[in-house]
Image 1 (tube, helix red, strand yellow):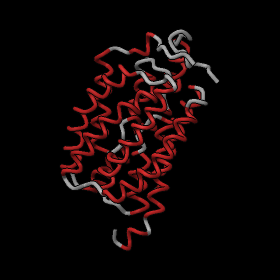
Image 2 (tube, chains in turn green, blue; image 1 turned 90 degrees about the horizontal axis):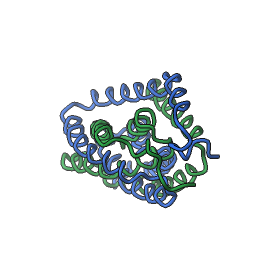
Image 3 (cartoon, chains in turn orange, yellow; image 1 turned 180 degrees about the horizontal axis):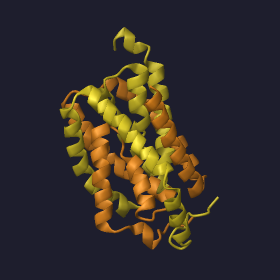
Image 4 (cartoon, one colour; image 1 turned 90 degrees about the vertical axis):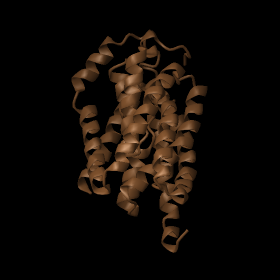
Length: 127
Length: 145
């Protein structure tokens, strides 16, 4: 696997900041990372490969989630016990997921990403 | 921890495990799974579920990013630019979320998921054109097994 990124994947400055702002808005509003918006935006609008878009999204999520967690925490809307338990599971899960990601092609990742969104949406509709 | 919370220990760890797996695999935070699971399965308030989700996302995204970076997939400049816009958006979004009531926030969340799903599923033509236009030089990962 090559380390250098293609010209398209550098991405222009303003669109990247704009995608971040929109993802941050969703992240703060809905308690999600914002990757659900960043990944499709980077792939469809900015020409990133699916794998690179996903890796870049996950890194950008760190400061975005930190800001949201701080604002919600100040308003006493964070359950620290639940957070510790969830984090214990997610730290194990994220390593398994990240390693699997690097074994899959961009096409397979795109299909997985789409299917995942459909499952979530259907679950929300049926509840 | 109250007695009723004790019964939530295993479900919470399992929800975290699933959310972390998705975060690493799909480059998302995992909140899109954690928030509905906490609200629908464990009866959390929408606001508390969202705030807790955001806190949990931080260590998972950090360690997952480290793994991606080692594999050479992470575009640091892109991540920095996206994060620069993202922190401003996150302040506005979270302040807005705190200003509306729980039921409305839950409905907005469901609507948000539907819009994203439709956007991903419907524009098959757009996906096809993008792939056809993308040259192998511009996308070294395309077609890799």
